[in-house]
Length: 235
Image (cartoon, rainbow, N blue to C red):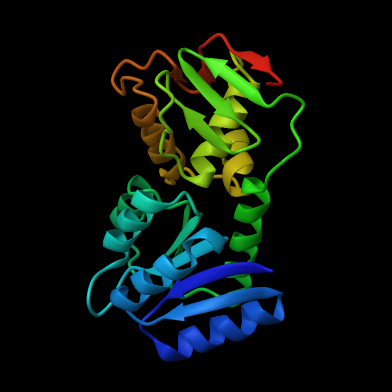
């Protein structure tokens, strides 16, 4: 059973989400503030399938917790924000969140987002295990990326999925709708910058110059292209 850790300071919301998600075959752990969340994270980190963070909390905020989660784990993160300001959403994505939902939202919408992320970050049976490019190795079996010195590159689940799609399609111009569908299960609106933030974050992790990227290039008016020689191996 998938295990989800939720932090929200509103008791009615916590109870509603727990009841709804448990009916849909998820195990739910609840926290009411940052302190209790971090304690539960430490206790269950190895077995969590997802973390859901409310931005507004009494003793801290979801952004600070998102940053701490990313220092420990690549578990998928959904952030809940009451603000309609795009800045909150961009900050969350830059800190490593995989998705966000603006309040008010329905439990059904949250469940759909959970399923979409877990489906896209699930372990697949690859035709090859390794993809190698410009000193990096992407390991599909262990879902990690190593640099030239063997160090693990910190990526979120959706960052990994995006990079996987790029290395599977080197030299191909991929438009925004394809990339958003591949990573988030939905197209991006004209004002949605989440994909741009995710690609900027991926460039940073791969030491790809954001001003003059050589690896993930922007094709103005068309999308993005992964400009690297990629080799595949089974071992």
